[in-house]
Image: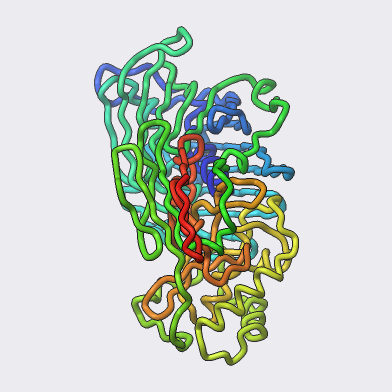
Length: 502
């Protein structure tokens, strides 16, 4: 669940409202106008998720110079506050981006505070490349990105202010400051219309997997935006209205809970059949594989049959997965595999155990018992942070397990989806667990619940790593599900062969 609001806030608040304080020149008769003129006033926005206010943003642009070269400085500062049941988490984002008037990247910094954790990303130009330095909980990674033909994401709306005429289009590649990665972009001034009784241009902007509709006044000021599929909006307002938060912080955890009839405990089930459908009429995203099969696929729904899996029947030597599994043994920003603290845990918990399944079970038991404070208060922590704090929810269990398993030579990936929370609560809730690759197949394990083989109430939606791509996909899928998913349990079969239709 944490992926949803963090991803929505990071991308929307640092990229999609760029140009918010701009006052561009009057549209020219042709497709090209003069240089942008910035009014440099402070622009304040309310940020809403699923139609409910969760935060606010300040945007300010100014003309400046860097080494004698004309530049635009785009500043964004935003705050998001959400609740996870009894816990309240405040996230703060700050971005300062510098680019030439035509959008060429010069440098940028982004800082993100999620609860007590800080994440920092910066980029600076070195000739024809951008050097990206990412610091996640002290784990520092540096990459170099060629800049030929690449614009800075924060600059995209500057182009719009210079071309506010219906039918204008642009496309190419943009460096997304929220992730430090290059994404494809496309923009189009769709039509001139009215919003709240005032004339505006409707602009469609696609950046990677996100599509944002912006409503821009004729003087080049962004008045509002809506970003899909994360169902997030920004609305221009006054400072006082922006920073005034409503009574009752939005509980995003409860927004991802789905009531169902009471089921037996998951580990007593052999098979579970569910129907997923979209209230909007769109079929929810899903994946299939061993233990999760799809049938009766229709335009707006799908039936999934989930089956309990057996543990490996034979011993498998550690570090014997082969080259095809190399990608699942790599470090990520949240899994620093060279960290001596993590390596010491593997040496102590796994030791010289030659069997990969026995090693995976030992790691699973360690993580389940080590994270003693099963708390929703943590943001998405690194493996080291989870190890040191002994605190977290399913994401901390999963990322710590993944790092330790990789160090032990066991290919691992993170899985997100839903799981049955019962007895008593009778709910499915958003969840993260892991899969390990042994004996030619992926085996689901759940360190949060201490299950060596995850039970068949685990409904899988995404699988990947704790890197930009994996976190992005998990966030996007979760955002599509929340507020739209309808979950119906159709039938279950117990290990004792009791079958019940619901």
